[in-house]
Image (cartoon, rainbow, N blue to C red; front, side, top):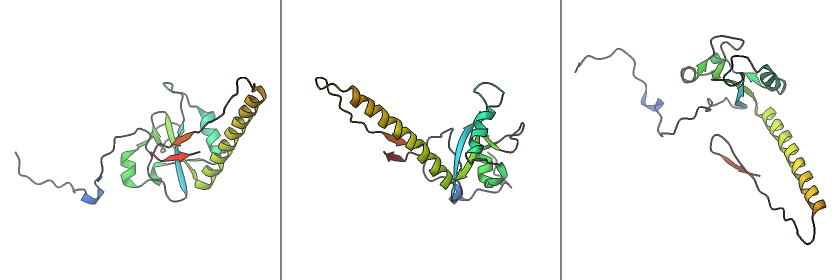
Length: 156
């Protein structure tokens, strides 16, 4: 066993993780204040062609592609930088690309889709009530939970 000292700089102990967590392939870097990150499909699974409509849809909603130089050096090491193609220099993950938007835009988008879903649920419940037969009553008792990728649970 060699007793030679390495010239490689040692990582500071405070940089080391304190708690082990199982890895997740959809983990995102910690976004700056006021910004949210989201993985967006950029290619069809197993194909090399771009799914341009999906990325353009997000761009129209206010999202922007996250470039590698926007991340800290440590995060640049932890995430893949796309080297070729239209999104060269962006952060990628297999067929996904990292995009960002302001938390206000994300909240407005979430509210829009939530309102649409609630409107559809009300329409279904109203239709069930119209079809309700006193001899076979329909009882609507529904509740849903939403769990995010970070393990935070929101009751609706």
